[in-house]
Image 1 (cartoon, one colour):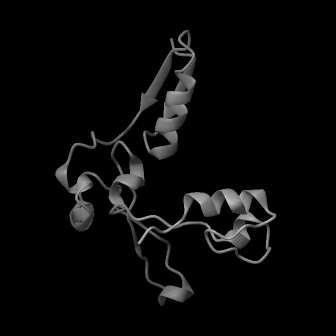
Image 2: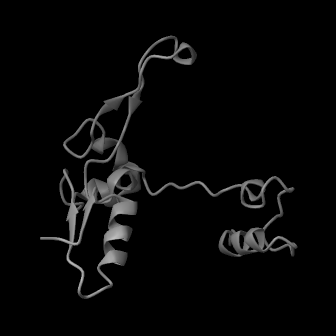
Image 3: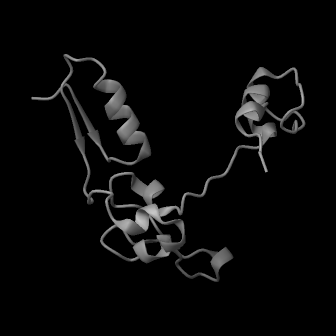
Length: 129
């Protein structure tokens, strides 16, 4: 008998299960349909496409749409601990400041702003090239 059952050991599922298990009395079950994330290609960004159409991928296709000339498109989704984050070549996209600040103009990193949420985002997104 479990207090909580989390289905899917992707990024969110793993975080949720970890947070729920902080209560030492809670019994948490984390279910994942895929494999462990020990495959070498998961750790090598240039090799991420080798995971496509494999046992680590659900191998989904989208529905045909007019914007794709009515063709389905391949939609890689991770069937592995870490979920789709394990198939993403360690790439990420930062939110635009206008998204964080509800439509106000973007503020470059390092510039003081009156929007506290935007200031926090700027502090964590400074590019140190």
